[in-house]
View (cartoon, one colour):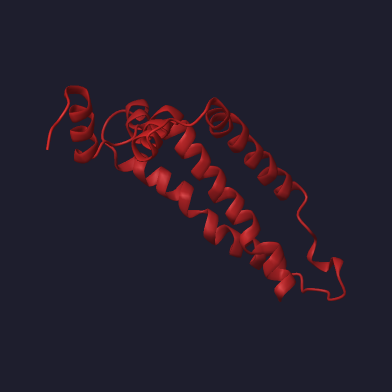
Length: 146
């Protein structure tokens, strides 16, 4: 059972979630905006090495690792114990039960957003500004005092 869960459990799901997170932060939210957030927290912007890693290297490597893991997954019957034939679909259902919610939510968010399809896509991938972000942007532009 442990080997079964090791093969179909968290491995692929974690890689997929980490890729979506990296792509979301770097490609949708934006490395510049993320760097500005870090500057507001730490007082300095991250160096070019980190921005290049976040923008290109990390998401691409994670995607390649995810695809290679899908292509080269282990067969269940490779060890001492021979699993029943019905266990392979159950394993993929187990894996998909974690992964499927991200694409489902993306489709849902696009479906409930008003406008034409292209307008909805643009609106969905644009980060929302909170009132605090607007106030911070305005205060940092014009200055503030306490």
